[in-house]
Length: 267
Ligand code: NAI
Image (cartoon, rainbow, N blue to C red; front, side, top):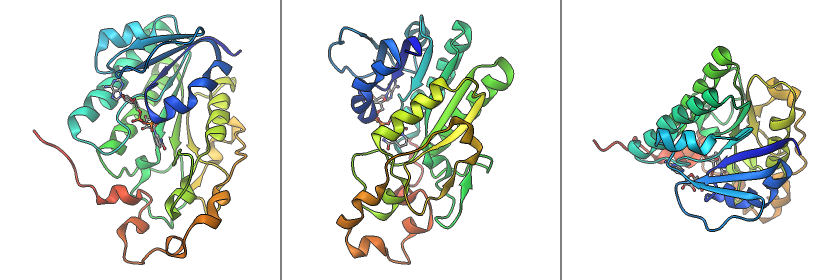
């Protein structure tokens, strides 16, 4: 196995629960963490409950770890306060620990909402300026920028995966374009953890779908080759989903329904 001990944050979440039984492929010991309780550990697992906003707790959570899959945090548009706690302060705490403890590599679950204000007619690559569609997307841009700083200045390697839509089934046009299968995510995690040198890389977490909005050529050295495609769901989609109304704002922008949100900031 590539590592002795890896840490997975966000273990109580949707992806954490789906990925959990596969993580043993990456390391002898899988340390799982979340702020929410999620039950007992299997024999090869360790469980650490930790709020990412708690600096000392994050340092303890990272002790003895060889690599981190950082999936914990707020995963949708929310009030500013929890986003700041988990995705801004949490990233700062995590990278302080990573640097101080000499941890070699992080894989960061970023999001397509870092570029949600690009048009659905744009082809976006990793060198184009981020255009977030809300506080959530902005917080993930912060995470991408912070991890780049830790690479440039301190040599900590990070792969930021701008995950598309990683749920079992695609049920509308946007989900068809942005869908990521669990198996393809696992392959991408594998490539991100084991490619000898990744520096700071932004890659697009997407299956081999038709009509993709993202060009992943800057991360081609990862040799990620998605095997699944959202085409398997095409037959189930009703015609009105294939041809959404032309005046719908959520079809103009890559961020989709996130475009219905305004900033949620209660002082
Ligand atoms: P989720 O919301 O189901 O899981 C996130 C976990 O983080 C939750 O269990 C939550 O308790 C934990 N968390 C929240 N605040 C925390 C804090 N302050 N301290 C510690 N833990 C905290 O999200 P999901 O779907 O599992 O996504 C995982 C990651 O992947 C997230 O970072 C999300 O932004 C990213 N992502 C997921 C996509 C998807 O399709 N599921 C798409 C794009 C990005």
